Amino acid sequence: MGLKKLKQRKLIANSSITSSNTPLIKEEKEEVLFDYVEKEIDEDLICSICLHPFVDPISHNSCGNTFCAKCIENVTVCPLCNEGGFKKNCAASAKTIRNMLDKLKVKCGMCKNIVLRGELKDHQEKYCPLHEAYQQVEEFKSKLEREHLERMAALQTENEQLLTVSKDRLASLEQQLIDQFRKKEELLETRMNEFENQVLAREKLENSNKPIHLNVRGTIMTVSLGDFTSNQQEPDNLFKKMFNGEYPCYQTPASKQFDDPIYFIDCNPLIFSHILD
Ligand SMILES: [Zn+2]
Ligand SMILES: [Zn+2]
Ligand SMILES: [Zn+2]
Image (cartoon, rainbow, N blue to C red):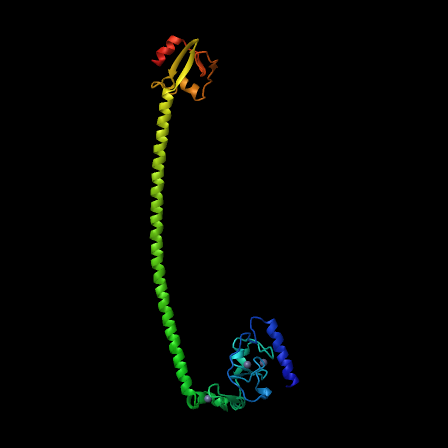
């Protein structure tokens, strides 16, 4: 390999690092188009980008360098002479180069016979002894692929249907659960209210019957709490306030007669009896 070519390759390797948006050397595994028989191929036929013999060679008229059509697909600046507007000055390479490329010996991938590169396509499509077998295999392969795709599509449809049904079922189940929960909540609330009412009624009954002792300006009286605190004409009466803590309530010392506290009422005993009746 000549020094000039080496320099050119180095240039390309470097530029592929710096210009990341237009990679000159493809990173993905390259498709092997031809299986060349000769180890040493004329370096004038080697593409400085892919390092293989040119395929569909294109030459840059400004510098005379040649590349594979595919290798310069996305290139805007000539990789070797750096001229911009690259594609405008490119044209299909000279017939001599094409002829030389066509004469390279390659192995048929199917029958492994050696044919000229320019005749490989024709060989594989018409003359290759394994052409028919390969064609059958290809047909079988595509049939299998088609069947596989159809089966996958059917499965997907089935899955989607199942999913829709499950979703519907799930939604109705969720609604049922919500309804059940609401009913239970309502029932619970009703029971709570009933219970509260019962407790209140009981409390009221107990309170109304609870005996309390009063010291009405020296006269000791025993009355029921209900009678004492409830007054239809005056619901917020003073006695009620005494027993719910809104108004001071004084106890006089317990007498020999009662162990319970005796509450002092500053009122004429006669008037007080009248109020209670
Ligand atoms: Zn190339
Ligand atoms: Zn150029
Ligand atoms: Zn063949």
